[in-house]
Image (spheres, rainbow, N blue to C red):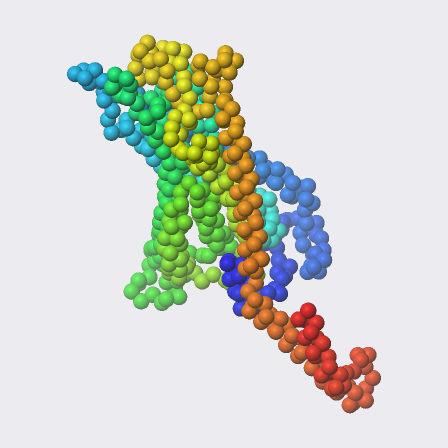
Length: 546
């Protein structure tokens, strides 16, 4: 639908056949090369411009930009790792704090212990959001500085280079924690006896479960899980993480977009009036507008970037948080009015430029759309319980004892004395944890190894991913064929416009040839008399219809 709307706008503003003319060099580019004596002829503009060879101008700074961007990506991943450490430490601290009831001889679970996973996920997401917002401010300035060092010749080259850097950095910054929770967390937890440190628990899904033993004593198990109750898992944590980051980002951007220009406006107005010592009562409108913020060449860039990041939240992780499109719609309703007010009241009138489309941003949006098909297929197959439940139902005819099939047994006697399972190891024979592994009583070579059911389920999950992607690709191709990019009515108008243009050209050529013949002058152009013209017009129309 966007392509159809874009085609209508392009035709309405007479940009269907618009090709960008050769751009002039950026003023910053010419200023930096003002002392360069070497000149080179531009074959398009036929003007001599300052010239520096590629290996001296762009190659060193391009290598520097790539190196710095890779370093910043590692910093963003380091921030994600710090949140992971925080989440594991807090979950362990909350889980091991239990009050012992001396009258009943049991451990009592408080509110915080019961909901330790949700509390930990929420606080970790809030901390991650703060780190993301801080890193974004740093990354924006570094990316702009690196792009200036590269000395792009035209504004288009500058925008494309800046867009690539900013999108890569913000993609890693915003989505790395979500991708970790969706595809990596809980995949490599091993067995409960592999970890000895109480303060740093395993990063697994659905930790913090309540179990009732044979004597009725409840316990909390953050290392070895039980059959009774499993909390939401990675899907719930992914939804919490996505909701907090997405909504928090939208609220912060809305405040910054409106607050920053207004603050700059009042600051400039106060400074200018203080310096000039003018009477503030009867200031003309044009002088009052002078203190408005300038709409620079990259101002619209950040508007596009904000929408692209939001589009990624809505599409890449929509299967984990179906309410994301609703929050995006609400944000866009406010965003339209806030941006309109901001551009009218807080900025000077921008200088319009003719462009045919949104440029590189469309390719980025198209890439995100294709990536979202893969990520949603993997989330449904490996993060949700949809495929395991369907596979279990196909093999057993019902979901009876499904939860038991997702858990494996662990011999509590093998846990060392540092691993606290909630009760005395001497009275607990086996405990269970979420995985598909052989029990302690299996063959010696197969103990705690993946079961045959695990490999069959893995094959089913991979098959689901392949089928899901092919179905979506087929439906997309069908929709493109059923709903063309250019509406049929608009295509007919464009063909009619081309036909009328050709007809006017032919009529003008006919009049010109007739005048030349009547004047008795010789001309190299072959003249066409009126009967031939009436025959030529239908043939031109027939050629267009073909």
